[in-house]
Structure formats: structure tokens, C-alpha cells
Picture (spheres, rainbow, N blue to C red):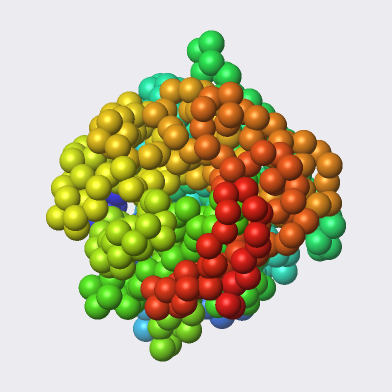
Length: 590
């Protein structure tokens, strides 16, 4: 509205009015000025329209005005054309001093010289109008500036919002183009921010956003900070570290600054996040391209460790393009049954015979090749089709495993539940209904959940898991030893099994502390009456360590890779009868 009022004021003035910045560039001209000069003047200076002699006269008068004086001068503005121009100092929206010019009278002569006998312009009645106009213009510009500031500011944090950040980005690109100095754009995304809102309330969440914003603004060399999403920040910074070592050191310092504990009331909140960085002009040539490529780097970082920071490179672009292809092809692959179940045995540590199988999934696409589960499962979760994928795999798996259960080749089938499903209302009833339709008893099923499923909505997770367990389904906490490793979850949730993450199993041969930790987890499971399962067992040494720790169930390539139904039928056929406790080792046919 302020911009509209300003235009209305200027266009109703019966004089040609213009505004210049301190570099002599025109930044505004009203309708009368445009009629006199033409439309192509914004951003240009006098040199673009007038000769050198005229420019020297104009700029001599401009200099007086920039110094705080007023000017009234007769100026030649074209062949046989003269203007009597009043110029006064004028504060621009960015706080710098420009000038406001008004062409009071315009004279055209046939001789090419101004007739000195032309009566002097009577300014007696004009000066009050000039003063009033200047005041109204400055007020309108202040209102406009305030409106822009409000439109560009995030209400929750006082930082720039997306529009404001994009404006700052455009300005910084212009500065970089003029000075030749590169700059960086970083996108920072907080981990598990929704959990903070859900557990501690939106007031705590708002406090986290404000504190993180303040900390970012206090970092030396930061030019602008914006909040451009719910828990996503954008940072424009001018300093670029050239070596990998220098960058890594700086990132570690930033991590320590940004992610210090935050106190919301009497609660101490631990915060973490990931960052993606893009450099101008090396990685992008426009603001939108910078944002896009920083987002690609952020996506890559979020797939890594907590507070991983990724700088955009060609590999990032390739990975992002592959991700887009997966997103596009995944829904159709689920509908067509292209993603198929495979099965990995879980064996007894004492007999080395299969006691169950875990249902996994594989996808091979003619364009993408073999798509890893890490790729398509995370994508399915992000685009909201993980439930459809789980149900499709469930249906086929129940058909495949029924014979193994009936023949006594296994005691249970282990299925993975998505975090989204675990907290969904009605999930337990729907799961039990599908089991009944498949003709599988609940006491032959183990449902594996991730700890992240629990922390998102503890009460809903407990309710669903409790109903399933009451019906006979075993509940296993998967990948324990990574992520939160929350001991409270082991006490609060209705659990039967604890699966030790493969990253710990792989470390026991090299690090005594890891072995001690695994032994402690097995003992913890025993104390809580939970069956422990060691994942990722690949060597006889790992198996011996795990068995020595007293872990009752093992899973890994040492025994069998994930197989199709037909291949696993062949594997079962290789299992000769073995006495309980014989410890006879069976080799995989792969």
C-alpha cells in the first residue's frame, strides 16, 4: 500500500520529479519526468543520456546537494531545451543520502540558447509546496521501507524470512560480481525439531528457533541469516576457507557454537542438525540456483551423521538427480510389484540352525540398476508411500513364508514396521486383520521397530505395540546402539527382543571397548528378559565373540545373505539335522 501511495503522490504533482542515489543513478521518476526523458532511465546515470559537458554541470550541482546544500540551476537537457531544476538532499530507504529533483520550468528555444530576458521563476509560492512534497515523500518512503521490512521478516525469530533472504542473496551476488569476492550460502536443518514441539510444547520450540537464530547472527563474517522453513535456516557468509582441513576445523567450531544446550524454562534441550553449503560463483550463478544446490548438499548431509556438513560438488548433483529419479519411479514400482521380498535367516547361536527369517526388500530398475534399501526406503518415507510399500511386501512375504512355518523350518517371521505406521491410529487392528487374512498366527510374527518410531509419539506407539503384543506378536527394537539408545524406551515399551546394530558387531574385533559395550547390551537384555539378536555377523571371530557374550540369536552374511524364496528353499535343504547345542556350522550356498 505504501508503494501505491508513493506513486499516486508523485504522479499527481504537476512537475517532473526524479530521485537519484549517491552514485547519480536515477531510482525514480514520476509520470511527468518519464514523458520528458523517456522510460529507459532507471538504474542509469546522466552519462547514459547526456553529453560530457552537460554531465559535468549536473554532477557539480549534485555534489552540492549530496553535501547537504540545496540547488537551483538552469540546465541544458537536450538540443535547444533547457530546464530550471530544484534539487534538495533526500534520505533513501537504505539510509544513504540521495537527492530529490523537481524540474520547475521547461524551456525550448529555436536559437539553442536560453533567452536571458526570460523572467526569473517566482519561487515564492513554490517553496512551501516543495517542502510539503519532500516531507510527504520521505514519510511515504519510510512507510514503504517499514512495509518491506515486515514483509521480509520472520515473525517468530526476527530473522529474514524466505523473501528477505532471497533479496539479501540478490544483493550479495551483485556485490560479489563487483568485487570479485566469493561468498557461501549454507542451509542448516535441525534434527528432530518436531519431537521438541511434541514433547515440550511450541513455546520450547520457538525458544530453540530464536536461540539458534541469535547464535547464527553472532558468528563473525555472517552477512545475513534467514529462517526459510519450519526448522531450516539459511546463512550468507563472506568468508571461505580454502582447504579441507580449514573447513573441517571451522565446521567443528560452528557446531560447538550453534549446538550448545538450550534452556527452555527449566529444561535443558540437546540440539543437533545438518548443513549443506554452496559457493558463489563456483557452484551457481543465480540466487535460485544457489538455494537449490545448497539444498542438494543438505540432503546429502542429512543422510550422514549428526551435524554432518556437505559442500556441494558434482557427486552431490549426481546423487540428487538419482534421488529425483527414485522419487519418480518408486510409486509405479510399488504398484507393479517390482520391489520384491527377500529373506535372511536368523540362527540360534547354539545350533547355528534357522529359528526365523527377516523379511527385507530388493528393487532392480532397468534405468537405475540395483537400488539399495537405504535409498528407496528413506525415499518412500519422505514421499509418504512407505505404508504402501510395507503392505505390498507384507502380502508377498506372508504367501512365501507360510510353508516354512507349517513345515517347522522356522519359528517366526520378522517384519519391519515404518515409524509412520507405528504411531498411526488403528495400525494394530489393521496389522492383525491382515495377518488373519493371510492365515498366519500372530505368535509366529516378530515386528521390528526403530527407536525413532517411539520418540516421535510415545503414547501412540505404546498403544499400538501393546495391542499387538497382547495378540501374540513379538516386538523387537531394531538397530539398538545407534541413534538415541534410550534406556527409558527399554523400560516403557512392550518389548521382547533387542537387536544389536551391525556397526557394533563389526567393531568388536578391533576395539575392546566396543566388545565390552556389546557384552553389556546382552547382559542388559537378559536383565530385562529380552532376547538379544546380533545383526551383521560376517566373520567366525565376530560369531565367537558374540556367542561368548551369551547372545542367543545371530544374523548376517556368515550364515546366509538375503535370498529369494527359491534360493532360501535350497539353503534350507542344506541344513542337516543337528543336535541341540552341537554348534554345527552351516555354510551359505552364496
